[in-house]
Length: 342
Ligand code: NAD
Ligand code: LMR
Image (tube, rainbow, N blue to C red; front, side, top):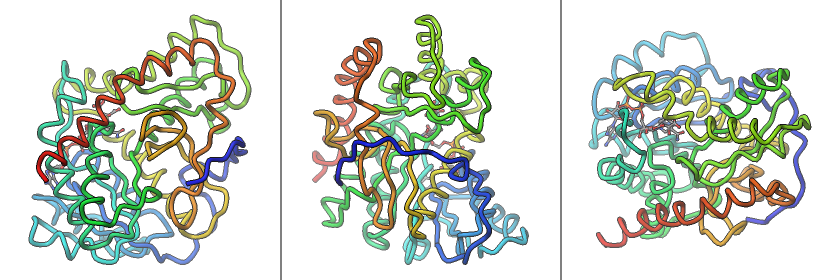
């Protein structure tokens, strides 16, 4: 994708939930892992979208009841359930957007990378099915560790000969949602106005909020920068610890994922003013994948925006250098996982 060096003017109407007049419901969305902690509230939020005509829910168990329940909501989309590998192909045929929150979540004391052994195989298998049945769909990867599961998806799609870098996204929207919330709280700002780009990856220090690029323009003391950065980086752990063994963020994640789906659908629908931070193939740094703000269009990533990375503070520039070795290792681990099985 092209790199663009401008900073978009984010308008309140780009916020989720979309307050625009309902347009024709024409898009088909599948959720893989739809009976889970994220999957269920995400399905509910997507069921509310006026842009969706078909909502396909897939899981290895317990998805029939979720679909029956949701199907009673008097919103336009038709909800269908699909259980187990034998029904996966039918779930995926014709989809415009496939969201993947399938996999195990963290418990206290674990890193996201501790989930690699289980989730790597789950993502690999599901993306193989996406490649076979709806290779043109936008693919939203939520399953952790995102820094590795996105490269896994890339390798699978490449092996199948259908990789389109513009259409594969690691979902990092929750980092932006958290950054916006925490900054608005700390600086007493009106929440709807706050926009903080978050770049890098989606684990620990690889999550880098660029507080100096906060809009509306606001100044932070060094102590505030340190405190906010650490809180945003540890937002996931904060929830994991509060849930005390019962899983990780599900509701805020569903909200964030629904915002990213809605943005993707608006882009598909021809809205020329859609921007989100996400983890994509990138030339902004020497790393092959990097989260940054991108412009979304009908064909996926229209441009990876470079402006946020210009004029960084010393703190941000150091943090950017510091995250690269970990992010690089996580990317390489994902690539190696698929390549060694080939
Ligand atoms: P969960 O255990 O509540 O739900 C996961 C669901 O995936 C379950 O319903 C399970 O049956 C299903 N599943 C397991 N294997 C599957 C397979 N092969 N095919 C289809 N479905 C399968 O977990 P959760 O809380 O919903 O979290 C899911 C994932 O999302 C975890 O890996 C978690 O770390 C990740 N996550 C990512 C972010 C992010 O910001 N990207 C945020 C929160 C959670
Ligand atoms: C999050 O950021 O909440 C997710 O990545 C889940 C986790 O394990 O922290």
